[in-house]
Amino acid sequence: MNSKGIKAISNKGVCMKCLRNKATHIYYIAYRGFGSIYDGRNTKFKCCDECNSSDFEKWFNELPEENEFFETYKYEDNINKLVDGLPLECQELFYNSFEKNGYKMDAQDWIDYQLEELSHEKCKEYGLYSYEEINNYKNRFPKCKYVVSVICNDGSKYSLCPFHAIGEYNHDVDKCGNISSECYKCKYFSKGHDNTIIKYEEQSDWSTYMVAKLKNEEFEKRFKKQ
Image (cartoon, rainbow, N blue to C red; front, side, top):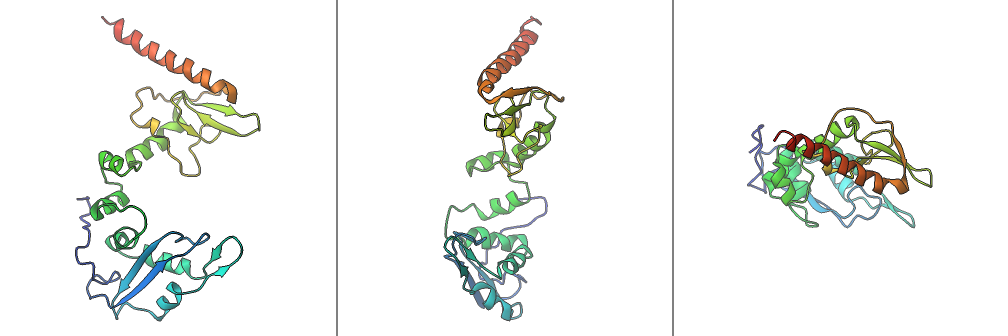
């Protein structure tokens, strides 16, 4: 259970807006294609008479504007705001329990994950990055003295650590949201900034050298004490 006491809904026939009345209206999201923010989703939203709106029929059942490559929906932002404004336990129904495509999480685990309180071990069971991993990457990678900059032959650039954590050029984290789990509990982390720039074809040798150097320093500290 999370620290906020938010529990998964056991009565899935309840209104997803007020959580008081029985749901009497069901609106579906399904079979939307590329270009839709709900591409690949197959789920539903349920509400009671009191919470229902004439707009819902228009939002959920609109036909897309289509071109050769993608679909455009005029009212998807409205649906998104509606769902994001629901209680978290009702968002769980929409994104997880009512979802027919893809894998499902345990309802309580989904809620705890959104609250950043699902354990690292549980996250690994679902193949998810834990918030410990995410925060370690965001907080450690930009500050680690063993991160260097890499320049490729085509002019592209990025940053790299000896253990293959990767980020944007100049020691920044990945701006696309990718996470390097190597930073999680890395025992070699040390604050600093290395201005070294290496070529792409040198990174394998540099990584091998740095790992050997760090391990050698570790072993010397350990065994010189004996």
